[in-house]
Image 1 (cartoon, rainbow, N blue to C red):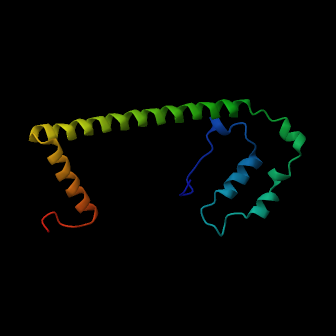
Image 2 (tube, rainbow, N blue to C red):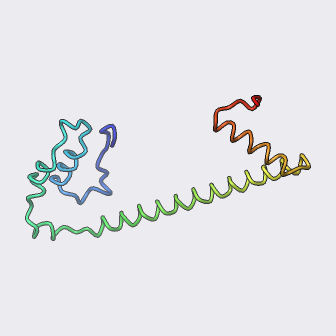
Image 3 (cartoon, one colour):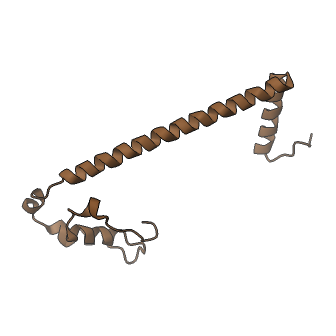
Length: 128
């Protein structure tokens, strides 16, 4: 959408009127000078359609599509959460293992924290 490259997929947009699609195209124009204003949008033919005609349109398919999108988004969120937890768990094991290998877990953690803090402050680890 940011580049002005989009299409109306029939599965999702098949029941949407030509006037509604025309309004959306006018609103999604990348060039702000070519994009319609809020006042122009309010005068668009689709905005002038009689409410009785709009009530005759069925939104059942749109609602089903929205539910499918919502469930996919939720699933993707859960997958990302599991991946993040697994990554944190591996990092914790590695971090803990480094301390055990050195025999001085606190010393290694303190050293690593010092280096990390110096990196954040953009100081060399070799400076006093």
